[in-house]
Length: 195
Length: 200
Image 1 (spheres, helix red, strand yellow):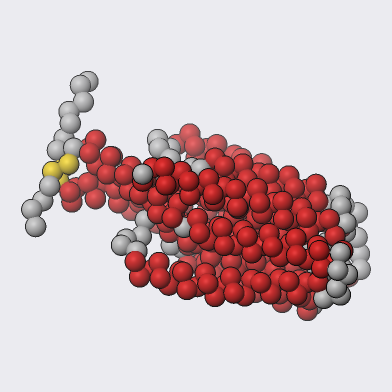
Image 2 (tube, rainbow over the protein chains, first blue to last red; image 1 turned 90 degrees about the vertical axis):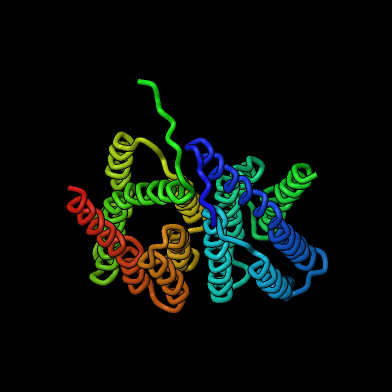
């Protein structure tokens, strides 16, 4: 294999293009944000309707919606890992971030099953939504996600002034602002670049 | 002095990149000190709280306020490190995002706690859950296994604390401080010192 010569400037450009590529790859992964965004949004609003409109006792069962979400995410993840050419630094960071977030949500659901479903836990959920989105936004240098994360934290604080029933709606609003809207924006930005 | 542009081979470019990564890692290693400070504080505060519950005594002040004392050396270390550095590596930037986010979340969680009391004695579980997140991410991003293990221990103890009383929860909290920050911090500090000796 012939060895190419790079000027320091070209080397720098190479690094920059690698970062840009990672950003595009991550934009393709907006499917995860949309999948989990819509599942959580449906669960929050669904639980609110079941509890306050239908008056169904086991309103929390709506959260079983996450099970098909986990299966579908695992399937997508396996498919993606076969396709992936090379791992990048930002890509790896995102991987560990969302592995950490996924495990935290799992741990939180175990805690919640012991604490009871009527505990005022939604502000903590919203806090975690903000955490994942804020760091992702910073990593991808994508401002709507950073703003989404900050907004989720504001909603987390405000929701503590409301009772459990309304905290669900704050959860839905937080997921809309921090996951769904930024994910659609990321997707359209990516389409715009590749067009 | 006019700067001469040196031609580099692909291999040399890669070497430059890996040297930059090593250099950035080395500067992160110095933050082992910050990790040690946090670890010691969490261990001390947890053990003092445990002692208050166990011996049924009160020190007359909230021992967790000592955590704020950690902010002073933290600020000192970060300013000192910033002054020494000539560039900020990408991983360092990521670490700044992760740990400043963690600080914000701890602040919001403390507020949440003050609003809802102790959530039937379960707030320690939420704190330990939160401790695990930045620790695990840092371990993964920096490929530093002691912190990955520390993060996992925080999560396991978080779930375990749901089945134990407050006194035991405090021992779990001390274990989190030990495994997530103090031990990894000491390992980082030792590596840094070894590296310094090698550089001389």
